[in-house]
Image (cartoon, rainbow, N blue to C red; front, side):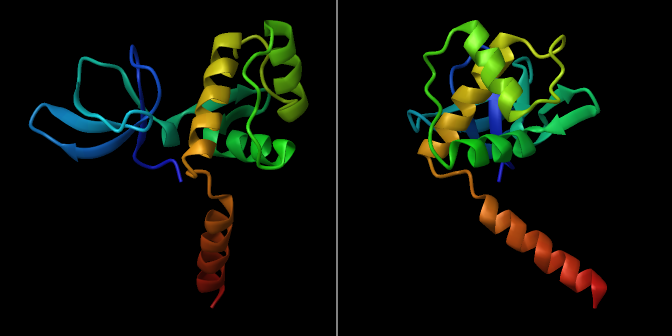
Length: 141
């Protein structure tokens, strides 16, 4: 689900990797659909590699999105919340998150990413669960 989706520091929104060039990757903005090169000097993070600190270790972003999706019943999260409201909201959805290591700016970013992916119909949890079931069935046979 999150494979090929990138966050680039200094750039707003999320990007989809289109291709690789000699010294950069070509990305396409999910918002504007414009393509641009992203060089190695930019900090590029794949969403599939991003995790949130919890009291038990780290939880992948995909699992965080699933918890939010279930909590919100597949709807968007209103972004106009105060810092305290954001912390309280995040604590209700992910009670085990590490309050000392996860900042309000991280929570805001996760909510923006969640809303953007939801608007673009890129949060498909049912397909992933079906794929897991198929792989588990194949292993047991």
